Image (tube, rainbow, N blue to C red; front, side, top):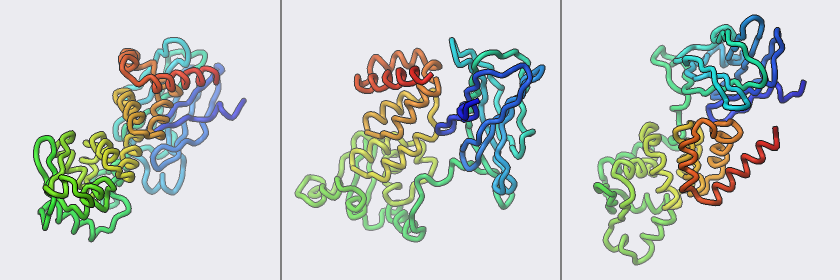
Length: 328
């Protein structure tokens, strides 16, 4: 049996294990695969019924901080119309060993099939006994900053301390500091270095962004963005980062958008990845659609997407489809 029979493919929060066949009485355990902070295993055991288990690999981390998982698991036929058996779903279940989650399936399965696991959230218990916190709510946008300086910068913005520039968004205005903007963006730096209207009038018009999104944009520049506002305004922040050439914000948006790709947002993210030249996000969306077979689950939306998408992007998708078919 080839090594590929035990390999689990992963992308973002999704894991898929393709199984060619199970004899009438057999057991198989996958290779470890990484989701979140833990290595995981899937196992299948077939006797009179089929047992599927999902559990973290035993380690010091698992013993000290076992994952509290929310996920959807289903079995898909890997051929034909991809009929699925779907588990009702697991919410906030602590998983320590291979007996904590067992899915018993009495429906006979034959031929090739796929075990598909989509992790909705992974939490760990708070060390002080408080509410468990999500590992995915931790720090994409706050990393690499000096706390004292960030507090001072945040106060300068929130309290309008010695502000000298006004930003006009689509539905309101916010005061800021040209020195801070200029050091964060070469576009802003150019505005204030030449005799342009922004320098003369001390205003910047950003009519394609709301006041809330503009506030999140400034909060990022000042090192004061909160995770919830970052997640809420990711696409607006991506547009602003591209427009004003703020590469670290653009990369933070790309990393974040990769982490929760699903059937509802994958086409929009693929379009944005192509528009803003985000190769890693584009590759992840392509793999999600083609290699993981989610293109079959969004047929109507995908057909509508084909009517308006860029031709080069459509060609890339079909090239990926053909390459995947050749691999089978």
